[in-house]
Length: 274
Ligand code: KIV
Image 1 (cartoon, rainbow, N blue to C red):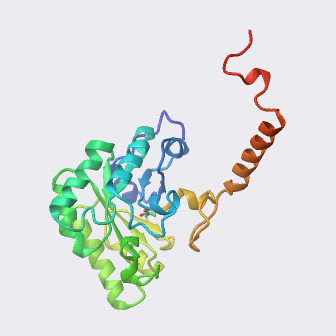
Image 2: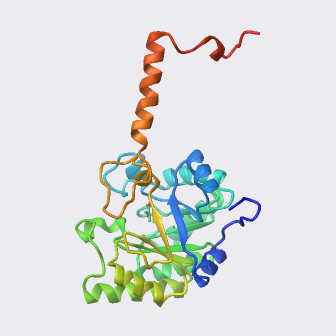
Image 3: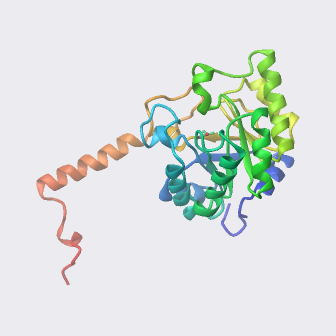
């Protein structure tokens, strides 16, 4: 699609896309250049995920990610995004302790790093928090299923929705989040038939990650689809490119050019000869 006919994505347009049966395509981004490239490619939204802790900082999980890290990465992404909706992920313990912490930190993303929405993890138990943030004028994306900030409670990255209790909890949670004013919900690692049920239970778009094809959209971590994170690759990830060999080749060409004196050449000096 040419940029002339492309409209800025908003939370309202998110819902309209579901109503029209159009799928939403979302990728994570953490830096200016990647965000600019993905925006140009046409993603509907750029999610500044707390996955940044693992894929950029090499942490074991998302727990060590701080507000300051997320604010800095979100600001870089927001500077680059022309059309995509910029969503900032609220890090562990930035919203769970109290309504006050949730509202204050959600507000910081809007005011200090120019996010257009925030995302937080949790189902029915987080609905009241979502409501309070939305009442402050800040759009909220929910996130249910295998929520990574609760990895220790789940005992690992396990598929959710297998048992009747868990299936009912997911449906009740999606409905409670919609009622609280969430504009969309991420469904992570939910059994596909349950994710489909959740998707029909709500009018707001569901965005799947490892939750089958019936969701209203899909999100993946950019580093995973480019082969730029090999510590752990979930089965649902599709690798669209394998960049490490390209980067390694460029770096080794540079190293050998420097060592052999082929770089810099005469025309690559900052002060070019006339
Ligand atoms: O942190 C993240 O990147 C996420 C998405 C993968 C949903 O929460």
